[in-house]
Amino acid sequence: MAARSASQHRSAGAPAGRGRIGRRALLRMAPAVAGALVATRAFAETPRRGGTLRIQFSAIRQLDPYKTSGNNSEDNASSLMFDALVYIGKNFEPRPLLAERWETPTSTTWIFRLRRNVMFQDDNPVFPKGSAREVTAEDVVYSVNRFLKVSNAFTLGTIDSVRAVDRYTVEVKKPSPDPFLLGDPNRMARVMIVPHEAIEKLGEDGFARQPVGSGPFKLRSFTANQTVVLDRNPSYWMPVYPDQVEFTYVPDPTVATIALQGGRIDVLPYVANVDAVRQLSGDPNLRLASRGGSFRGLGFNVKTPPFNELAVRDALAKAMDIDSAVRSVIAPYGERAYGQVPPWVPFGYDPSLKALWPYDPHAALDALAKAGFTEKSRDGILQRNGAPLSFKIKVIAGAQVRVLTILVTQLRQMGIDAQIQQQDVAVWASDLIKGNDTGVFFDFSYAGTTGLYELFGSANVGKSNTHFYASPKVDALFTAALAEPDAARRSSLWKQAQRLIMEDRVVIPLYFERQYSAVNKRVVDWVVPWAPLRLESPENNVYLTS
Image (tube, rainbow, N blue to C red):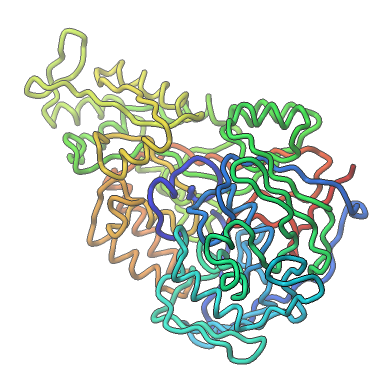
């Protein structure tokens, strides 16, 4: 994931996170040509054209795809009106979209070959009916430059140059290798292609209210935090089956679940937690779709006493029977984590880290005793120099509260006064960023390609690195890995960095929670959003059976 504030990177919702973090094989940087668009697809039945697809959203204030601030609902609505050069496919690989193919003649140069006869939408204030024009390389150059200037949640890093080689060819040069440029869902996949006329005619604010792109749907109406209605784009270069997509405002997760089961909406794109997944899995009219997920852990602010002591952090890790807590609350909708990188990320996953996390309460008490926590107060709480081993774990709502309740009970039985402090997401994120009484906290991120770096790289301290952790050795490994084009070497560097972080006990990994969408069974070919939502792609094409 690209660098984002904790409120964006960690907010509840999809992958990404917002972090807000992923699973996919990345584009190799050696000179190669990406696979061409698959022209045919096999369906279980003939797709049916027509109908209105109703998708839940929690907050949509504007529709400029560069200014969503990591808001999943805004991402989903705006992305349907635009196309990018690439999208993140079902297997978390970069796949061709407006770019039919690409080449990397050097490790710092990308050449994109554009699809021809792709038209911007017409019948709008920018392009009157019948006056649509073709998307060209100059539009890509304009869009990349605008993205670099105004994007508030996503990044391309440093770009040396972007230029149109000819009408259908774009060259992008970077100062150093960037193996994540296409594979990270928060980089090139976020650059929706925008016509310069739209910004010039409507202005920044006007464009955010009435966007114009080349995507499969075009705007019919928009009222902030009420509704967004999109019409099928009849000129789109792939088949588009629904006549309309309607985004329906249902901000409360419980009410959204009821709305889905009652038929008011067709799609709940992000099921809030495993408890809701269990509830929805028993509904015969619904289908659960899964893709990727999120990392959950117990994080330490390593600047806050006594958690600035490795011995204390290590003792807490040994004191808890995490396996039993995860089995009782999360299974089968998630799995135990032993590092931050999950199995669906194609590099850095390291099951051997399991050996670092034994459940050994006797060793935990011995370690605390060596650290000076030898006495007990009248209520049985360990103390050192008269100060009790007492702390609050800041957490947001979700199944993690039940997991932490089990773990806190175990700690208290050992004389460790741990308590749960449930907070609103915004308050929780602000406290973590500022280091406001955050010795121990619920740690969350979308387990994506660069999630490890986001959580533990020193450049992100006080942003997505709310551990305030800085290790020169780890940073050096990150620097090397983020510019390493060879997949095997990159994986080795990532594993080395991850192991050092886990040995330092900066976080106690708990589990990976899988990401789910819940959809009415009349919705066919839905794919859980990962980066911008795609209803039409070379791999899927959503339609309604009734």
